[in-house]
Length: 481
Image (cartoon, rainbow, N blue to C red):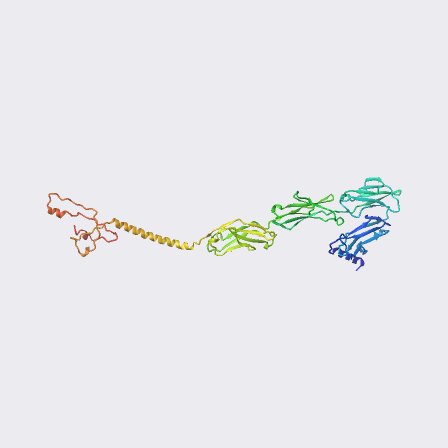
């Protein structure tokens, strides 16, 4: 393995090492270009308390260079030009910085670190052993300051667009020489990025929106201000907090969000982030099986809802209530069962569903359940009772009819005198006389005749008491005539 490759491998390992600090290389004087024969000091600055046993390592163009905190270059040579980096014990490696050593007559010097928004000084510098005259400054080949005795140009509130295209011309001593500079502009802070936690966002979550940006490690003291917007409407004005949040997120909190960062008259805006508030479950509904209940039936109530695919199977819990009283505590089971239901189980039922992560809870509509009495016994008893009732009615009607008939018939006791008492007439029907023809006798008729005809009956009709009895023998009817 070659020494060059070994040094490069060490550098890669160092770059990947975990570290809480990143040192910064600084120059003194603070110019990115110098002439040969000039001197410069490089320092590896760790922006924190430095342990007494801190060991520093330097690299030039990825090659090991020195183990001191500072490198002093005296009588610089063009060979000293290059990219320098450093690291300390248990620190990350620094960003590279470029040093250019020149043998020209004129160079345009710029500070080592220039950030957007800075006030910058450019110096039209001539070789130390010569005398310098008046200077002209250009921007994009346009004169911005004509011949003047001041070799420095002051730029206020520089931005990225104004960091390139600078040039100067200087008389040294009788000829004109030029130097150019492209200012190595750095961002004061990076373009912000808006982030949201938790993600994905569920209804009921406590949401935090963060405006994330990185301040330049060379300007850690920079103070930033943050503002937040939703759909072009400001929801939090500029302030020191880089966070915006809302409690117990609602569906209407969904929308396009972006943030702005301001520092030293620089304002940067993030891209928009669509924050969608997801519904973890739909409105619950309580369902009874079967849909009609009778005493003795097994009743099952189901708390039905549709769970979002964004939450786990165990993310929901269910509870059941009757007439406002809890009958089953929250659990993963979405059913409530009653074995052999009774009328006392009648009532108004409802269920609640809660998302275990943020305790979002929803209640179902109420369902009134009536447990009907058991009618199986009555199904058998009613026909039997009706039969008995009809039988009693028939008996009573029969008795009533018989009673009416008896009360309407006035039987006469027949006279046995003069009747034939033969065995054929032992049983005589009760007879009523419906027509009697009585003939009066003349006043001059003999007494004997009156006596003989006084009670004579022309004819008689027998009405038997019961039609079901056989008619009596006619001879029995007329024996006394």
